[in-house]
Image (cartoon, rainbow, N blue to C red; front, top):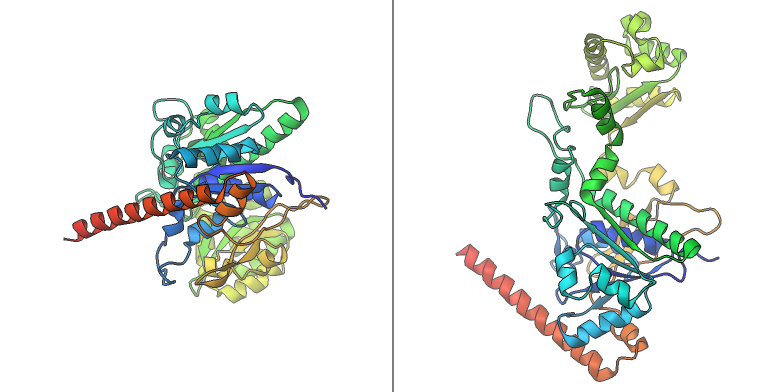
Length: 426
């Protein structure tokens, strides 16, 4: 059975997460993705993170997470031969996907207008930090910077303390989702209308996308919403995260029926809430039409109630009430063994040199008739040089020169980095 993007070839020139994760989705849906890397490779190969006691030369988790099943070509495209190899790859490509800066791409002859003239059927997909226009179009971006610029950091954390960063790199990943969606839209447009085009999005744009409701609320009402700790800044009533007697945390979101609300009040021994006029409908329990004072009152009552019983007591009760919306706050260790993630194949296994088998996130979109699938391990740097470039007509001496040039450049770069590190240590 064909996969949705079978026959589509993507040439990827990316680093970190936002670009690679977009190409990963296309790969899971059947596209062939060829990742073109510089002599040292995508820097994410070396992003070890914290508490990482794996062998020093093992592939870094960040790289593993977003490069499953791709093929890697290692080229120094500043050389004539490396540049020729890249353009030979583009001769047969459907999509060129990148998160390099626009000025650098143009300097390398890889700007949109430059490639459009040479490859009129090529979809050119690019993503950056702050959008393709405006005074900060070329400004460098990390995930936390986009969170701050888009308002998410300011509205996260406790009201009496400094703003807090979200607990995961969510904006790079959201930008990847937007880019993958844009590429899919462009593929559809090319098939239906015969038009190829440029696809652009950004981390800042993704930050706004994730906050559409909140931003629209502020625009319409001129509200001064502030961060609210364990509660949402724009949701009143019971909605929040509460600590249990033994130190776990439960997100308590909604009680959808009166019967479930009564059962909750009996179990929690919050008798006053059972007859409180401010909390008798689902809307009221989410703050609709109630005062700020009533919101603070119910949260204090629930805080005491949750702290009076153990996690196991709460879970036993909550699982017996399907009309209550809740979830235990789980650690990443718990998420990796969650039976719900396993049942839905949300996690997959890759096999890595020096590490062995390990879990990572898999293909999350299920299609009934043309499903995608995970495609295997992340590639070693340059593993596809010889087979792919041979198919494109490069001879053995040219392949040897490409390899020699990349190796020499890699060794020189490593030596320079070591010298900088040694100087800083003195």
